[in-house]
Length: 533
Image (cartoon, rainbow, N blue to C red; front, side, top):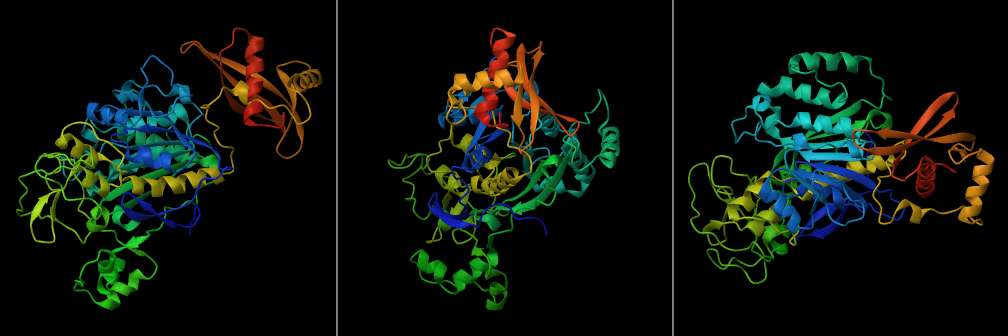
């Protein structure tokens, strides 16, 4: 069995229902930095942010309406010709084609790259053309990994990706994640590239920082506390030098059997102040799986505290996106949602009106369309989250999103593993204050005194005596590298241990002289406590 990551689950209220959550953040929790690809309405991005002490360095999205949704909820635009600011709250957003986005400014600064890769090429609801579809954007995920070298990757997609007809290409996707730095050559067929990937993986070591350990799992959102039956494939990759090859996906916390038991013994109906209506299921079958898990959450659990919508297109005075929509009907293949079961999969409406199947049957037997707010509850978005566009566009955004809580379950486990790994955190270069303001001299000495003493012992501002984590000392130097194309200067910390040269990325410097750049780099080293300087 693999290692379990993260503390035990606790139950906390969320958006009108209760879901399993863990307490993860403390003052000692190291910060994490992430990049969000194919952000959409922000489901997975919000999940990662909720893990605690995690900041998005950049969110990328091409859809205009989805970008408007992100802006309404606090994202701000970063033009293509500008660097991402580090001192602003909210998500830095770059609207546009991901093919035109460079991530090189974030090299070695990213802990997690995440994204719900567009699912239309693989969806059972679409044409499922797979790798022949122009919307197949897995190669852009691989490029992002090459440009940033993150410690972990989280990717989400529809279960159609596991269709037998796509198996060969799915294996290629997994191997491309395992060896992302083995780039495809110009005009190279993916079959030929896959053969080169296989050869490279055969000779790779478990400590090679250019290779990743990859795990995947088909997950039903209902099994993890989401009031919706939604099957999705999650793929997680960890850089090999982290030593996380034994990581395993979180175990399911909820079950259908536990729901049957709760409905049979009456506790479910008591919770909703309703007369018991036990389902036709044997008690033996129900209790077999129910003892260790919580009941599936139902549509009633999700929306029980929302008022009935007032009428067709009539806004509710107390709730946003909660108005009625006429024309709901039932026909073969499009049966309504039942209140006392998890909702059916929210769909984006690839070949029909978005949300066309979002119909609920009420207690009196009548049916109506679910409101956007009710659908957002089913997707576990917070009630404060706003959506841009007409109803159809809002429902499409929800259908394309990752349920926030399901994303959180995976992201929380990944973040816990990254924080426990045997390498130093990536110390992202985002700060509420500049590094100079965070500099602290050793206890009992002023900054000027400490700097003068260090310079004297090391001989120059560019070379100093440092204390290694194991107690030994070494002379370290700052190496400045200029990127002429980007017109940027990057600083690395270099020192030798047991005859081997160690290089650690420090950050970007932009002073007017080499001496000032060296001094600025040392201040960053001090501020981040990279070594005992």
